[in-house]
Amino acid sequence: MPAEPAPKPFWLLSIDRRVVYLFLLVALTTPLVVQKFTSHLTMKPAPLPSARKLFDRIEQIAKERDEAVRPFREKRRPELEAKLAESDDLKKVTDPAKRQADLNTAVEKALAEEVRAARLWNKIVILGSEVEPQTRGELYPQAEAVIRHLMMRRIPFAVMTLTAPGVGYTRAIPDKVARELGRDYGKDWANFGYQVGGSLRLQQMGKNIPATLKEDVNRTPVEKVPCMQGIKDAGDVPLVIEISGLVGTLGSWINYFASEKSRPDMANGCTAVSVTDSFAYLESKQIVGLLEGIAGAAAYNEFLAEIREPDQPYPSAGPRNHMTSQTVAHVLIVLFVALGNLGVILAALARRRKGAGP
Amino acid sequence: MSWETLGVLTGGLCVLGIYSFLWKENAVYRFFEHLYIGVATGYGVVLTISEFLWPKWLKPHLLDLDRAAWEPYHWVNALWVLPALFGLLMYFIFSRKRSWLAQIVIGVGLGSSGGLAFRGFFNEFLPQAIDSFRPLVAMAPGAGGGSLQLGLTLENLLFAVTLLCVMTYFFFSFEHNKPGIKQASALGRWLMMITFGAFFGSTVMARMALLIDRLQFLTRDWVRGFETLLRGG
Image 1 (cartoon, each protein chain N blue to C red):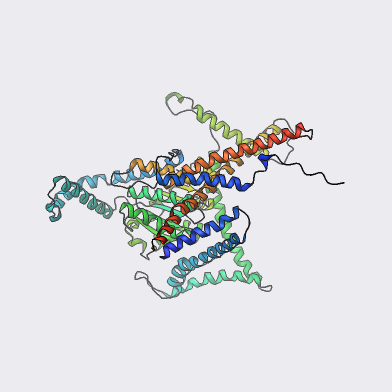
Image 2 (cartoon, one colour; image 1 turned 180 degrees about the vertical axis):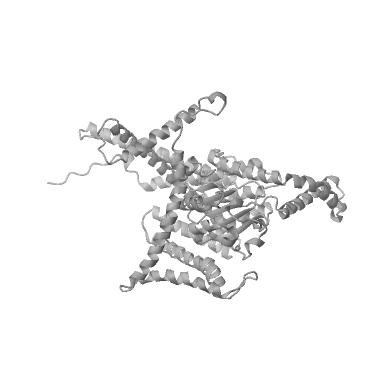
């Protein structure tokens, strides 16, 4: 007796997966291509509260620093203005407005140097950057946004990585932002590259930073890197920002990076896959802020645009464009999930009508 | 053609080769898969040597080569070879007679990891356990006890219900057929299902982000690479 042919599956349940991929590709690519011709079709990213917390913490550090150096600046400013106004270069400028602007720039630069030399605010932010090729899509924009913020506010920071593939990005990202904002290596940031030893290395660093790091990537001793002068242990670090797709590295910083008397604030930038793990740290206030995947980077860039000085470039539009593409794709995926479920329900109803049971 | 342009054009070909798997399993995909694994392994080995073994161990401690001016050499530095020799005992694991030597290294590793994990456990999970004790009626701070914070109260209630129900689901010391326990366990399972849905949603979001990064590379850098090539750059 010939076998009964298998019943034809309901059409909604038998769509070739490649058709779904094709729809997804079109949904993702169309906004990217359109954005090449017009910037009006991008969507403003949601202002994520967890990203705002990190932004506010960095702003607070900048305010603390400004408060610490204010008396010195107020005392030195008139003296420097009087001294620099007599310089030959400024006397040559005939336009009074331009002359005043040039004088202000020169005074600010000289004041920054004197403040640094006087070591009135001896602190450094540490950026643990585990940006790797496989997480670059989400973590590169996060690292860029945070570094931009630190450089905009001239908060000195040290960057390092606990994973070998991250070493190229510890150099490339700060160099790129420094070129845009005119910042100097050594004065505004230091790069300590790849640090081997994981938790043990962090534990040593917490107790004695110069003895553990020893030298930067250019083989300059820690004590001779200007922004690291006077930095002793974790007590001199107001904030550690750990940008990583690995949940374990954030745990290592939280658990082991502390001095005998103090533990710095921690913040995290993570991939969307690991965001559910990082939320536990945020809820229990073990971290003060969180960048959630590319959405976190896009929201952070919006905050940066609000504090941008007129002579500073706009933060990259990349994360915002990225989020627009992602939003379109998410809507499509929701639609496909709804259609798939509808297919299951309609197929069950059809079987029931034929009396074949549910 | 510059090395940079060549790198970008080759990178684009690699991306397309890997994504050809979406059509079906094929030889091009397998070639690029093996290429990727080989490159990643080689990159890791070279970086470990160039970023750690050579500059931070061999050069400063064992060899008096290319030393920085600030770094005086002393023969005591040579003693740093001892921890490495101790670590190399691990390779006796391949010897039937001398495998006990490898067990010493494993024992030291387990002991130090255990000690670190013990400290890490308390630092990491105690704050989270303490944070789970939340007021079920949240009041805003203020004179006379302050006013009721409805949103926070509901959030804390949901948190407490989820915590208790999920923990009940994982109590396997008694059967889950008693009134109250049965319903709490079932609710715990549903709440976990919702959490797994959120996990999956964030995983999809992460994968999309990586795909968009590659599409941005193809539509921007790769196209620009071709333009440079056509201009003879």
